[in-house]
Length: 134
Image (cartoon, rainbow, N blue to C red; front, side, top):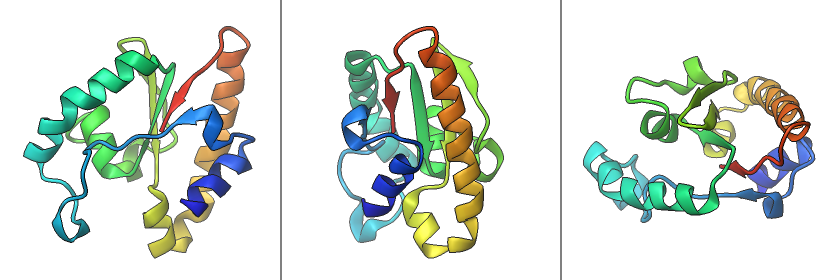
């Protein structure tokens, strides 16, 4: 959580300015990645949250989120820093903070993603208030 706070602060955002949620609503045993059927079981909750919050942008932190939200073939190393619009949402992804703690060499890439995200948010805010879902 502390690293995510620092990441948000780096682009002048606080936790109060974003809504943070998880793809699955409970931690899988042994903190393993959730199985496809576990993600699928929780997807209605994520969709409901998205409908209630109505974010303009969704930022996927890590491969599990990217595969669930952007598409099953998404790999964070390929989709990170890119923006796609789908069903009225702007979707992007970057490394999960836990991955950055395990492999600090990815932090410069993540920082570039954050700067790109900041520019995109500024661009959106020129036209309409932007809500961001992490």
